[in-house]
Image 1 (cartoon, one colour):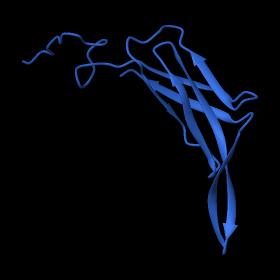
Image 2 (cartoon, one colour):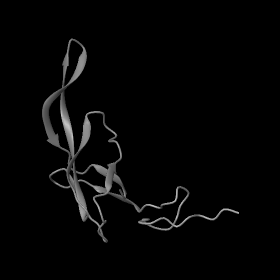
Image 3 (cartoon, helix red, strand yellow):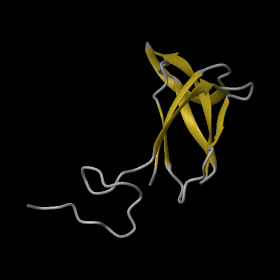
Amino acid sequence: MMYPRKMRGSKGLPGTNGISKRIEAYTGITDANGLYTITYATPFLVVPNAQPEPPAVANYTWVKVTSTTTGFSLRMIQRASLTVLGLELLAAQFTNVVGAAARVLVVES
């Protein structure tokens, strides 16, 4: 009979791959500057992976402003588009998106 081996430096209780990871999910809306900012209740040991859900609108995108062991800040922007010969192109100009829904999954590194 095989027993799971205790691994040094494990991040939690053994999972299917031997190590469990801390995962947190956040939901909210962007503020007047297009920012969505979270401070973790318990800091991570190393900077975690903050993964925002893709925006619902094609010319919206998330920009990571900061990510530390204590929290993160993301900005939702809208890229301006222009139509040339029937093709829609993204321009270099952008604006912050106020009141956009934000869903972010944070996974321990």
